[in-house]
Image (tube, rainbow, N blue to C red; front, side, top):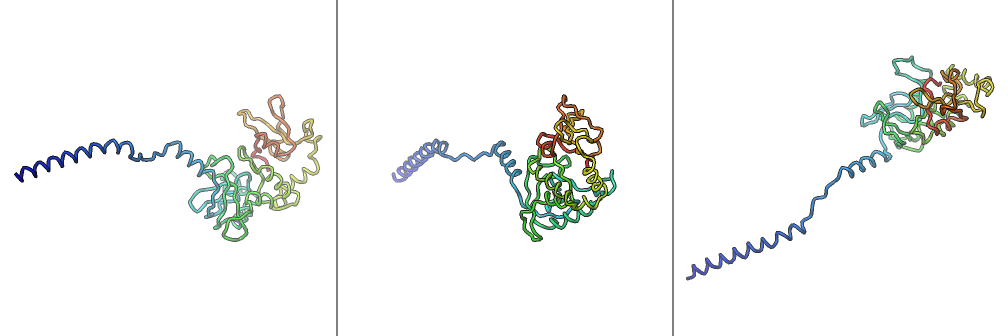
Amino acid sequence: MKKGLILLAIFFLGFWASQLVMSLKPFRKTTGQKPIEITKEATSTAAISEINKEETVRVLRVIDGDTVELADGRKLRYIGIDTPELFDPRKPIECFGQEAREENKRLVEGKKVRLEKDISQTDKYGRLLRYVWAGPPTDEAGNVMVNDWLVRQGFAHASTYPPDVKYSEQFVAAEREARENNRGLWAGCATNATMQQSDKVTNTPETLGAGTSGCLIKGNISSSGEKIYHVPGCGSYEKTVIDEAKGERWFCTEAEALTAGFRKAKNCP
């Protein structure tokens, strides 16, 4: 008798347990926490945010006056300026190229700098395009924009390419200051000194054939549709003819030309 009662109890206990399990299944489905999915759009947005923010990095070495290598191996080209060539196989070493490199080393090599992005992420060679902020001869990034410093002290020319034009007017003003005060390459290089003297003597609206506004900078549109401006002293300045019917125009300042989407001709000093 006892054995029968025990078997009956086991049967009812197993039946009750199975019913309990079945009743909990819907609860699990409705209350179970679904894993969070990270969408492709979310990761893309995060990546863009990461790219756009400023960053502080250490400069491993200086390559030339306007290019450096960072500690993580990335190459970086300063936005908005151009220093004399040192390593272009098509050209001899240009006047003041070595001095520009040495000044760049003094400012940033082995130091932490702050990078500021404009519009473009990299150039066609894969180099980062940035404004670079350094400080006094300490280890911390400061508030001296290296791009501006090199132009203002006569180690570089202003050379802005759209769409990265945030500081274009500042760089043009910095170059004017360096030229007027005979700093760096403006005093130490024969080509620049000659151009300066030529500007003082001959660059007038009458001698340069300026437009009716009296402005001297020629905004030319190439056969491929590229907008290029030429200032007095550029290699193609004299032979460049402005056809306003084609959308070409005269500018009074380089800042005006840059704002209108023109870039400076590469054969300008």
